[in-house]
Amino acid sequence: MISEGRKAAAAQGTGNITWACGDAAGLTGMRLPPLHLCTTGKSFQWMNQDQILADLDTLIHPGGGIALVSTSPRASTPRPEWARYSAPSSSLRRVT
Image 1 (cartoon, helix red, strand yellow):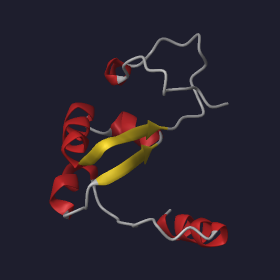
Image 2: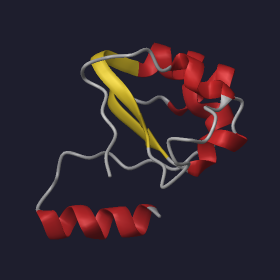
Image 3: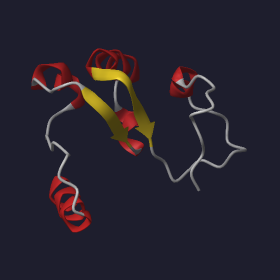
Image 4: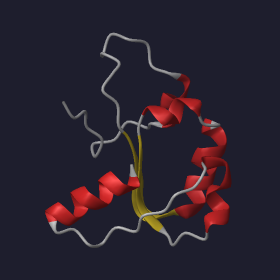
């Protein structure tokens, strides 16, 4: 995935991304700089969500954020447990 991300960034002329490979359980030990954005997809459902969100809270720069990217579920599907961390905000929007 990192290889593909690097290719896509290079194709777009984007050079302000730091790529790192690691395990969510060892996130705080990776000596990362303050993060402006963390993106995750379906892998979030298999993580220790309480722990990863607490860890990210210490790593994300003030004004930064977390993007949970998903191709599903539909709006009629009950919200998962982790959604309780998503406070309503005018800056949040559904991307279709």
